[in-house]
Length: 125
Image (cartoon, rainbow, N blue to C red):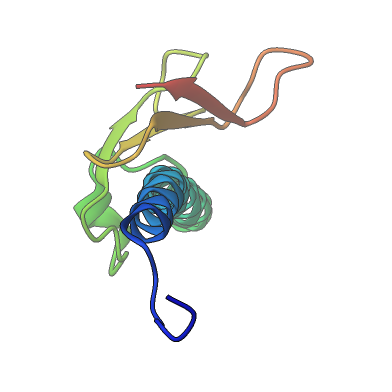
């Protein structure tokens, strides 16, 4: 018995269970990181569209109703919706809403936020 080498069945099973637990934790963390990356993509796209809206306003003295009117903006697979801001008129304010199927949040940029509110608002999808 002294000269036998190798692992017992119990030792192998314990290692397999530990690897399974670690894999389960890693997969759930990966899904969380992936959702956060899509959230960042939507937020960055919304900021880009808002900047383009301001540039459009500087040239035309009104905000664009469609994203296509803003020029070559890379929205990729982020769904963008433009509408009037809190003033209710695209001539004076705008609101950009962005979503992505894999993102966990919806982002809204308002050009004229209520007092004390930020321009970029996020909500859970």
